[in-house]
Image (cartoon, rainbow, N blue to C red; front, side, top):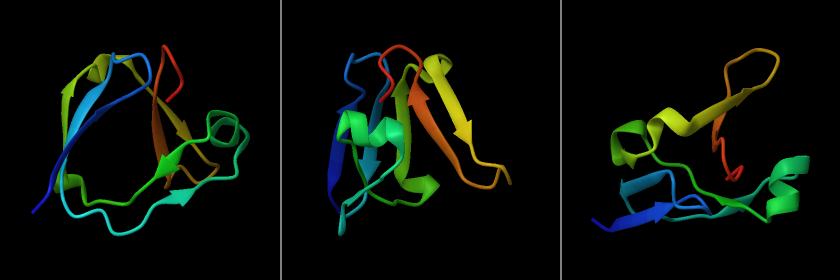
Amino acid sequence: MACYRGSCHCGAVTFRIDAEIEELTTCDCSLCARKNALMTKVHESELTLLGGEDLLSVYAWNTNRAQHFFCSRCGI
């Protein structure tokens, strides 16, 4: 299994993914389009936050089922 480490743009939020990344997608919302962000889907158990959890902000759509987390400093 692959192990990937990453962070938001400013480096405040760091994470590790222990999974094979099979597909990348783009989002057409105004924030992601502006940032040219790429996304992948992994199970929660395959994602480990290493730092900056207290800096995360959440955006939830009207049903609050889908929640996207962003760094409150840089927006990624």
